[in-house]
Image (cartoon, rainbow, N blue to C red; front, side, top):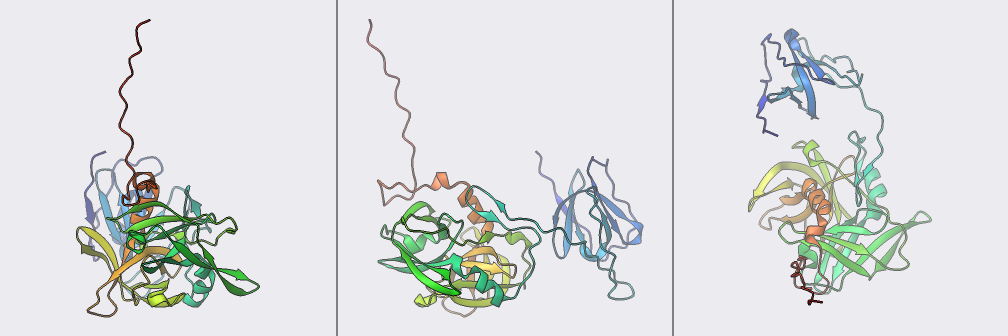
Length: 336
């Protein structure tokens, strides 16, 4: 498929132009101010803009220029709310609640998760955040599913094979600490600083787990919070804002946050106010305060979806990758 260029309509677009293309089946119509309209397939909806595919290109339409969105699925837009004489901001009618979608290993958060208070989220998500211990130190992690798969940083377990996980389980309205010592390394990627572990203790229960969100929906300035074990102080909560979504280090992009990060937070989750994991905390700038970084959740999903490529070879602990055996030569049978 050929790449499409993306154009942005100016926020103060006063043109009366009708941007149209041959209307495909199932196309959506975005009605703009000044009787203009855009017809195409909506690719993404963000707080400040809507991205729509019009066939030959993709347009970024500012939300403050949208009067109404007409969908073929008959999802109607809520009436425009006026915040002034010449301003019209439209909010779409809320969608019906969606169940979390599950891949073969992790849960994806619904697209329209409600916003909640940090206090309530910490109470609901605390069981799923764990402490990862090795002889060389400790870090944090979070449970992906009820079977005990969990994510942490590669640098937390680098060079280690003796790993334990401390989790907290809700029992009679109280949290009870439980240490699991049968922890297997499933996969790890040194360059992405990610590791996938699995708790395999015989007495392990079904684990509380978190849902992975979509960091593309985050907006700069949005509030986020972290749960982890900075300096070994387990179940510590820090809150801040998202400073930027595109901080570049050595060719990779990271989420930058003002939430306080310290040694021991590594591998822990960075949540939005819907309780969805937006990133995996992995580093900070030691010369300053409130400058922490997290691996975007899109990178985590890619690692999990392609974990066979990063599978850990138990017979070669110093090698984080599994190499397939070379094809064998065809054996010639002796003549009869």
